[in-house]
Image (cartoon, rainbow, N blue to C red):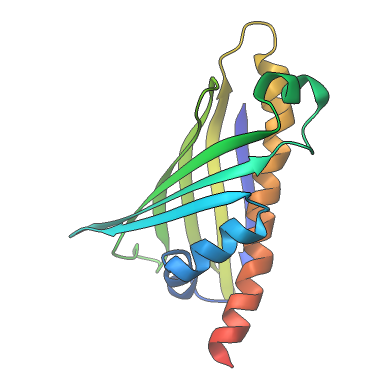
Amino acid sequence: MRIHETVEHDASPQQVFEMICSPDYQELKCTRSGALEHEVAIEVEEDARTIVTRRRLPTDAFPDFVQKFVGDSVDVIETQVWGLTADEDGGHSASLKVEIPRTPVTMSGSVYLTPAGEGTEHTVEGELKASVPFLGAKIEKAIAPVIASSLRLEGRLSREWIEDASA
């Protein structure tokens, strides 16, 4: 299933990039996502910054047939690898991989921060795949809204983060 979600931030792509790469922001994102437990690791290399979050999330919002498949909670590992230099237009991009261990569900794609007027468009594009005979498409349809909700959360958190940073 193809995923394409965009939110807008009232900050420049560089400010949003710095926010996303902040350990404190990643901790806040994990906490506000309702994680029962979480870990954040950020590795800075010569030409890239790798952000890995591992969250244990409740499945109470999932449809019953998905809950039967995954149980009361799922672990979600999200890995973003960001280039450290901005694009020609001042934007930033990252590769994205989302894994749910002990399930056949993965997502791979890209994240883009592009200038949009006075702010930034934050776009996630990718392919969500549930490799389960007969149920794969239903599982993908059940999980896609969770991914969209996660990006909308980032849109809300960025407003708080930018306001706090400028205060």
